[in-house]
Length: 154
Image (cartoon, rainbow, N blue to C red):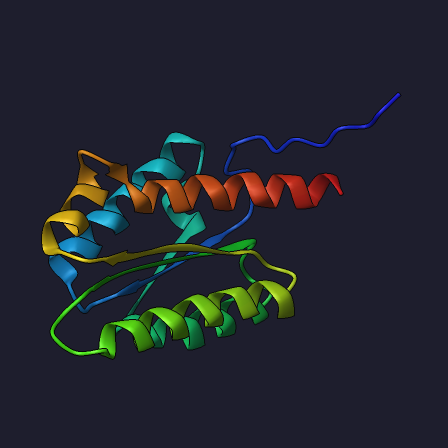
């Protein structure tokens, strides 16, 4: 018989860290609210959630790595919003954040989920922060819980 491992979406008893960028806070605050609401709906208490604010998206990775290495968290949820402007700065920031979060997943035994919006327009960011396209913060929290559960089963 083939053994199949599927993750359950439940907060369990561990602690979750949420790293959120202050830059574009009018969007990231909505992502944070979605992540916290999702964690609580799946059984997390206030005591299981730690929120760490960083200045911008590039700073998400250093804080997330320190949290993942601390041994105090079962997952790190990374939230930010990068919106394209008039310069190539957008491309550099998006590449660095994606690479950094991916590297945390390779280096640490703690999953880091990607809830960083990379949008062409402000309207797209707003849509992904709780309106038409759902809430990417909640999606990142769901991913964190399910990934933790899969890892526990392995």
